[in-house]
Length: 461
Ligand code: PHE
Image (tube, rainbow, N blue to C red):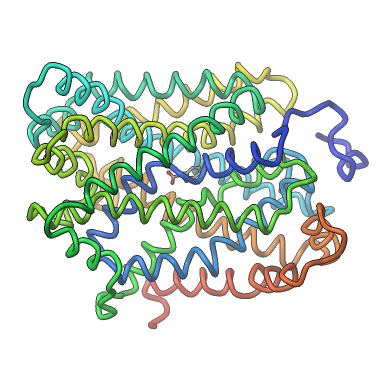
């Protein structure tokens, strides 16, 4: 997209996009909902002391996450371009903002590198738990997890399989691929999750888990806890790296951006809380350690369910659910580089998808092997590859990207243009357009900068 005249009317070529307002909603929600809800939210809540972290997280979603989601959708739909080209052209004569898009492509690759490792475990657990249920063999144990995660060929094969799967969906396109798949997956996911909740909540002693999740002990809040909550809110809502800008570019003009984004943020948060309600009551009922870390899901959940009637069935259901959630999110991660490369013109969409998948697999191998003997000794700033990719994306790249996006939307783009895009689908400007604009312009960037400075020790709160 070189031709500036075309920008206000959209690109000259016919561009694929979401065909319906409902499809646009489920696809956006499909990007947000993922392992972030089912794996990361429970484990971070467990590690960071429970309800106090949940409280900090909810605030971050409301005052930073939601406004930024709106900002990304506005910029995306206004430009109708992939993230790199959208930011390159959104402010006349300030092409350097394309760095937001490039940083986003980098973040997408880093996130996919560790995300597909976890997703590979999830798919492996689907196969293993279904097999165990069918043959009536014992539950998946701590040892079975250690041998999977600490292995090399087995997790790599699952990881490669997962990447191949999402590459195929992405190659199929936006409306035929993304929209179709997510419209079907989201309701199935919700149904399965509620089933697991009912099971967990009906356990004797379940209440302790509920209060761990909802009764905050504010003395547990530290700078590190707040940074983790902020990072999770970016990761959860797929913000700060152009995913939601790219999806914004596929939104129909009939979509009302603020209500759509609010519904996405709310539904996503509900899914996280439902996941927490499936995990923690059972953790406490059976006396497990809530702060087990990334393995919480894989070690506790099968053990927990194994002690209940029909446990094998619920274990399988739980991992099928996690797999479904992971697919929608991975689709949106691989879409960022794919859309950029294919809209640069020379590369066809399926080829762009394969190149993206291949690069992600390359880095992904590092993340996966860093969990086992082969690379576990290689440390960068004291962290292995997996943890470096995770920390650098969620706690560094995404928040910095978020500040840059807030600056573009709030300070570099004319207010009139921003509000005009926001108001599409309405007769007149609704009252909340101005409020959300103020959050984008002032509240979100200031808060992010304060939290980042505080975590670097440059500012004492
Ligand atoms: N939001 C996804 C999840 O919660 C992860 C994700 C992050 C997807 C960034 C796209 C971009 O699992």
